[in-house]
Every structure is written in structure tokens, then in C-alpha cells.
Amino acid sequence: MSITTDTKMIGKAPEFSALLRSLEVAAATDVTVMLQGESGTGKELLARFTHQQSKRKDLPFVAINCAALPEALAESELFGHRKGAFTGAIQQNTGRIQSAEGGTLFLDEVAEMPLTVQAKLLRFMESGEYQAVGDTTHKIANVRIITATHADLNSKVKAGEFRADLYYRLNVVPFHVPALRERTGDIKPLLNDMSGKLARQHQLTAPRYSKQCVKLLQTYDWPGNIRELRNFCERMLILFPATEIQVENLPLEIRNQASDNHFTFQLPDKGLKLDELEQDLLIQALRKTLGNQSRAAKMLGLTRDTFLYRLKKYSIVCS
Ligand SMILES: Nc1ncnc2c1ncn2[C@@H]1O[C@H](COP(=O)(O)OP(=O)(O)OP(=O)(O)O)[C@@H](O)[C@H]1O
Ligand SMILES: [Mg+2]
View 1 (cartoon, helix red, strand yellow):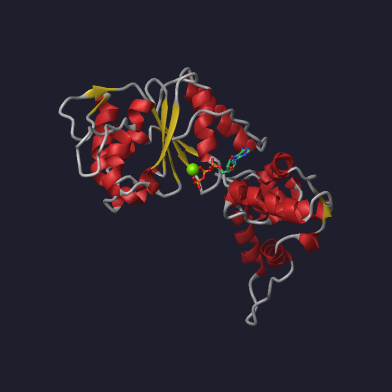
View 2: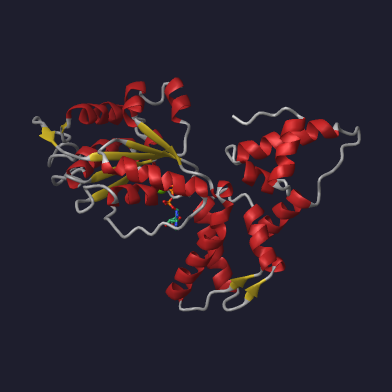
């Protein structure tokens, strides 16, 4: 169970700032929020942030990871159970819903919730009523629900693995949490903040990063997002305290990807159509930056004007 802690959100990239503003607006209401994003993008931190911006902030924030619960225990974890309700229930258990009374319940990895529990959660969301396992009476709780998922819930619904009615109930206000590669402007501030905190924790002096290093870190994909960046900072701190880190000190996966990105493009033996390749890259850059023309231009090493000129040349329209 998690308790409320102070939430310091690092990040000024436009995609991230817009998300924080929208979450602030949603937080002021009691609306059900769903955070969708890759693993390690900060969904739990954003859930805490939403709670802290809400009028429930002085009441509990309780988190439960649906992926970590064996099916047999999920219902009792959420709704509680009576003593003797099942073999092994040697004492009464307060469920997370009751622990979150008045506050916020964060259902992490909600896509993994067993179907039997989904039906009961839906009932709770519609009526505020629930039943502890082995109990014959109904209880009532006033809890705001925030969910997070990295899975495509819509396709889970289509595959019959997630109830459509619950999906619509949870997906009232969905938010896309950007991957770190979609907010490269935040890499440097995150790096500084995390290095500083970890240095204090380990009682070491944080390393500095050469300009070239920072550039490479900004082109790396970060499949594990902010969690991977944090682990990277810790590794660099332990290996190179109080030094200026150079490109050759960076882990191989980062250097390799950087060289893949920059230097090893191979012209196929049968050749290619340069115009088509250029159009494809322009479109890919726009997709990766969610249509942000300045950042798309930067990804291709172009000025915004040159980028716009090339879009026009191929009649590529930004939607
Ligand atoms: N904006 C941020 N500023 C500072 N630290 C952050 C930020 N976002 C995330 N972190 C840190 O990154 C790590 C991962 O964040 P979090 O656990 O919230 O991600 P998640 O999306 O819930 O991941 P998962 O999908 O794996 O559950 C945590 O250590 C968190 O404190
Ligand atoms: Mg999480």
C-alpha cells in the first residue's frame, strides 16, 4: 500500500506541461482519470500529483498494482474479506477501497485485473457499493478512481479480456503520458535532478556530463523511460563520481544506438528513391513528435523554415 508523499514533477517540455495543466483541471473535479503510457513514464507519480491537486489531498492515496495480484487474492485485496471467508483468511482484512475512504484509489496496470473483479469494480463505480469477500452486507465508500495502463485497453476489450462497460466507465478522461523520447527537452533537467538526489543518497559527488554526452542521451530511445534514466544516473554516479562523463564512458547500448542513428545508414545494393525516403522521414518525424513542427524539424537537423518548405514540396499536410 502506498501513502501520500510529496510529488516533485520535473519537466517543462510542452507535451508534458500540457499534460500537467490538463491533469490540474481534471483533479479539481472528481472525474475518473485514466493514464495511458509506456512503462516508466511516470504514471504513478502523475496519479499522486492528480490526488495532491484535488480536494481529497489530505485524505489517503492508496495504490494497488493489479498485475502483481494473484487472481485468487485480487478481490479480497480490493474489497477486503471477513475472517474465515476462505481457507487462510485467519483474520478480517480491510480492503484497499476502505483504506482509501474519502481519498483516491490508484489502480495501476488495470488491464491485468481479473474479469471477476472487473464486474465488482464496475458495480462499485456505479453505485459506490461493494461487498467484502464472505460478507453478506453491502458497504459504501467514497473513493475517486485513477487508473493506469501501458496496454492498449481497446484491443483487450475487442479480445474479450476486458469488460467494455468497465472500460467506458474508466476511460472518461484518458491522458497520454508521453514517452521520454517524445520529451527530449526534459532529459537534461531530469538528469541533473536525479543525479543530485542520488548523489546525496549515496554520499558521493554527482558526475557532470559533457555536451556531447547530453546530445547522445537526447537521441537515445529510452525504452524504459524515466525509470531507465534513473538507473542510468545511478550507474554513472557509482562508476564515475565527481568526474565529467565523456561519450566513451556511456553504456554500450546508448553509444551503439547513437551510432546506428547517425552513422551506419547503408544504401541498399538495389538503390533507393531519395524523394520517397525524404517524404517518409518527414512524416515519421511528424508522427514521433505528435505533429510538433519545430521538434520534427530538429529531429531531422533542419530549421523549421526548411522543414516547412519540404512539407510543402511534397504536399504533406499536418493534421
Ligand atoms: N516527471 C518526473 N520527475 C521526476 N521523476 C520522475 C518523473 N516521472 C517519473 N519519475 C520517476 O521515474 C520512476 C518511474 O515512475 P513511475 O513508477 O511513476 O512510472 P510508471 O509509468 O508508473 O511505470 P510502470 O508502468 O512501470 O508502472 C520513478 O522512480 C519516478 O519517481
Ligand atoms: Mg506504475
